[in-house]
Length: 498
View 1: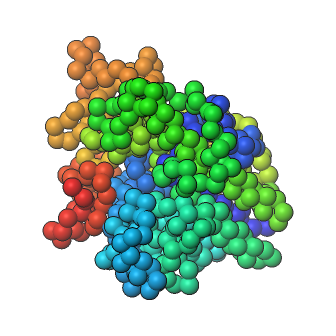
View 2: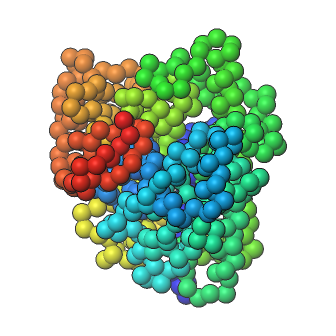
View 3: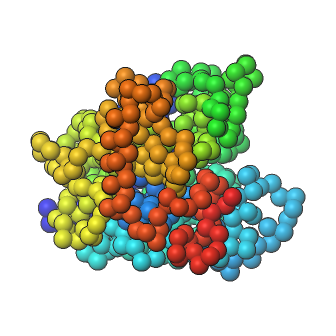
C-alpha cells in the first residue's frame, strides 16, 4: 500500500442498534447496510458515550467523555451568528404565516451567537489533517459555530443546526446559511459527499470524509419524506418493535387503544422511511467508491450518534425521551459496522463491549499513529479486530460507562447500574436474566452487594477521567438543550434550558 488508507465515516442520527436488517430487524429495509455488514465487521455491543446527539458526537471526535469535553446535551443555541444567515432567511423569520415544523429555525437561529463548544479540544480529524489527510464534512455538525470550518476540516458543507425539516433544511452555501426548498436533505448531504470524492480523484494525499445524516431523526410526518419510501411501509405492522404502554416518564404519550396503536405505527412508519432513504444514499456512496477504485484502500465506518427507542419501554426518543433522563440499552447502544480495506475481515460479528470513546485510539493505532493519542483518554484501541487478530480486544476490563448530565451508568455483560445524582431514582438490572431491562432490582436485599460494587467502580472511574471544570454531575441538564458553555466556563450564565 503506497499510502495510508482513506477513511469514510457515516454517522446517522437517532438510529437504534436494532434498526437494521443485519441486526435482526425484519421490518426495516437496509440492503446497503446489510451488505456492509456482510463485507465487514458488525459490532453487536457498541455504545455511545451519552444518549443524546451533541454530547455523543463530541465524544466521537475527541475520544473524551462529556465530563471532559463539556457538551452534556443537544445544542440548541450557539450554532451560528445571525450575520451568517442570508438576508432572505432573515426575512423569512419575519413571515409569521410561514409554516415552521417544530419552529426549529426560528427558535434556534434567530438572535443566535456562535459558540465553539470544542475549543481547546483535539479531534482525531485534526491529527489526520496534520498527517496529510484532506478532511471533508457533509451534513450535521451540531457542535457549535457551524459556519466556520474547524477540527481539521477543509471541505465544510454543514447544516445550521442538528435536526431540521427534511424538505426545508437550513444549509451553508457560499459562506451564508440559506433555506433549501424542495430538496430532500438526505440526498443533499450525499450530493455534497460525492462532490468531495470527485475532487479527490487523482490526488496522492489520503482523505477522510465524514457524512453526517440527520436521518432517521424526527420529523416523521408523511410530507417530510419521499412517498416511495413512506409508502413502502403503509401496511407494515412492525412486529419486530414492541407495542408497550407509554412509560410514566415519557414525553411523547400514546394510548393503548386502536387510535394509540395507529399513532405508534405512524411514527415508526416515518422513522422506517427515513432509514431506508438513508440506506439508499449509503448505496450511492459505495457505488462511487467502487467506480473510482477506492474500495480496496478505504476504511468505511458506519455508526449512529446515539441509540433510540421507538416504542421500546413505552418511549419515543433517546435519553431525553423521558424525564428523569434514561439510559436504557435502546438509548445507549448504537449500530457500528466497519468494512476494512479489501474486505480482509468479512461477515464477522464482534460481541465485545466497546464504545465511541474507543474510536480515537483505534483509528490512530490502525494508521500507525499511536504516538498521536492524547493523554488521559478513557478509551482503548480495538484495531486488532480490524486486523483479524485473535485474543484480547482491548487493554481494559470489559466495562462500558455512559453519562447524561447528572445521570451515570456502568454496564458489564451481566449487570447495569444507573446512578442519578444527587437523589435518584437509581436502577440496577440483572442483564443475564433480564436482558430487556424490565425489572429494576436496585432496592432488593439480595442485590445490595452487587449494587455497592457497581457504584464503587462507577465513581472510581469517573473520578479518574472527569475534568472538574466540565463535570456533568453538578449540571442541571434537563434534555431540553444546551444553550451555553458549562461549569467554570459558563461565567455565571445559564448553560441549559430548564
